[in-house]
Length: 131
Image 1 (cartoon, rainbow, N blue to C red):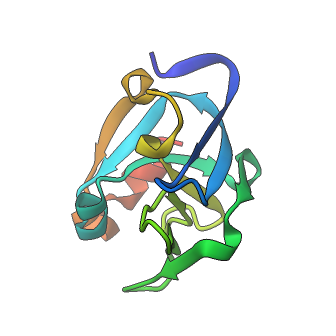
Image 2: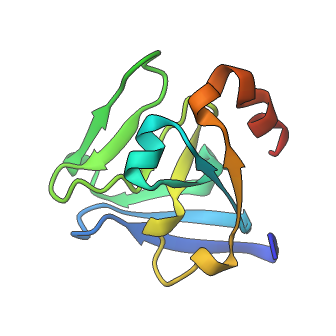
């Protein structure tokens, strides 16, 4: 269930439609993190290299929130507040797309793996090993 035959281009965006993006998916694999921000946002991470992500519109309405180390760039639409993607601390040269923000109902296709982000420093190598 986790692998696709050929890479698939999926579209997504925020609730109001001001932010739109495309992402190339080669595995239906996502991560559910239990850290404080991901839990509160309900974020399901589809982590991709930067070359597999394209922001189509909405750069002008994105606002960035940072905390702790400041490495992660948590971007969200300033109009509707939805966090549809961001630059994660774990993969700062890539993107983490919220599977829940993809168009259509693709969530059922994804295998969701837990990640202990509440204990990030002790768990990060486990996440990176899944790449």
